[in-house]
Amino acid sequence: MAQHQRQVACSIPVHPPAPPANVPLDVAVITRAAPTTGFLRILFLDKSTARTTVRKLKLVLCLSLVSAALSVGLCQPSLGQGDADLEAPGLAPFPTTLARGATLFQNVRIFDGKSAALSAPSNVLVKGNVIERISVDPITFETNANVHIIAANGRVLMPGLIDAHWHAFMAATPQMLLMTADSSYLHLLAARQAEATLMRGFTTVRDLGGPVFGLKRAIDEGIMLGPRIYPSGAFISQTSGHGDFRFLFEVPRTLGGPLSHSEVEGVAAIADSPDEVRLRAREQLRNGATQIKLMAGGGVASPHNPIESTQFTEAEIRAAVEAADNWGTYVTVHAYTPRAIRQAVAAGVKCIEHGQLIDEPTAKLLADKGIWWSLQPLLDDEDVPALSAESRKKALEVFAGTDNAYQLAKKHKVKTAFGTDVLFDARIASRQGAILAKMVRWYTPAEALKTATADNGELMALSGFIDPYPGKLGVVEEGALADLLLVDGNPLENIKLIEDPDEHFLVIMKDGTIYKNTVPK
Ligand SMILES: [Zn+2]
Image 1 (cartoon, helix red, strand yellow):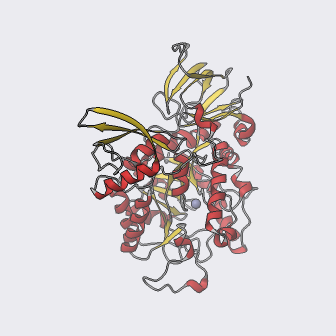
Image 2: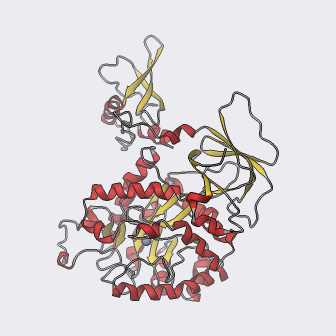
Image 3: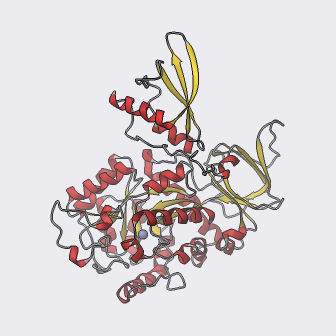
């Protein structure tokens, strides 16, 4: 993970860049990036004497290498990735990274993300960041091998959970704070929430709007703790659309004039023509978006658009679809009504967010075209945030459609993803697993867990060649990425176990690294 990132960041070494002035050597090869020390191990090859020298250099030197390489056009424009110096005084490396290596789960019953039943008692070997072997027979290894053994005593091993509709920047922070507080403070809050998200057993989130590129990078580098993030960057909205959070006095905008606050912060991007949508989509892709999120219809929390409204034109949405498609990825849209959904489908989007007000022919259309439906179990219950009277009225319309939406999704076998879309409320964010457990209103526990594991994993892979975490997510099978939970109890019998991850998730592993282990010794 971190290692991989850093090697990509300094992808100069296979070519011979000009070495720094004080290094009289011909070729520099970065052989290994130390994830927790901030040092790069650089192998210098001296052609004239055929000597090789291994030196540990502070990144300061790496940066001078990078700039030298840039001057001869050899380096990717990922300048500065991996430039955090974790050896700064007083900052110890995260102990969790020490647990990396090989881990053997002995005597587990597996929920593999797909099946309706648990496996026979099995053993699972994780090596590096992948599941290397699953066997009902004992797995042996050399006695001196560095393998961390977890005696699971018949407990259940399952894939890490995936939330397909999350907002890492906004889930737990009140809306008014988001609109007024210093942004550095808001990013720190988001980082705290990212750690809490991982500790709830959500090892991956698809982030559907908000400035999370820096957070994602810090997590991937091992600087902060959190889930894998598939970021959208800013959600793209038309003027007066669901992503237009400007104050009334900020309109009319002057073409070419300064951006509004939420645009500067990277929460929203306002666009009002195919050309503007294309530009804004490309900006997100440039910054690392793994998919593009458009607001294609009215929303609950936004003040200036009726829920019935259809947003953007087909040509505008298609501009984003083309930009995403050229990058190997896709567009997903916020849309509730049949009209908004149909326009987006006609424009080529591959995923619909929400859709609670859908009708049967439109649900069938999604099934026929193989379009993903990212649904949330939104109900008028304890997980409704404080809303204005106007928003509350719109929310009740959406809640009333939720039952029908899940029934239609099941009836027509639409590819259905699970997401929570928690906004502005730390208490509700803490119930991420409890929101998943509500799905038994429509599904068996195994089916509900499948949407949040194997099915969501399939949706993540839709990011194609720009997928930042290539490999299989959401399943327990040989070769898959090692995102695993060890559960005390059987969630297929009692899904309520996932409501209390502190108590019932004894091991949380992401990318082969153990972040929590409370298995009694
Ligand atoms: Zn959302």
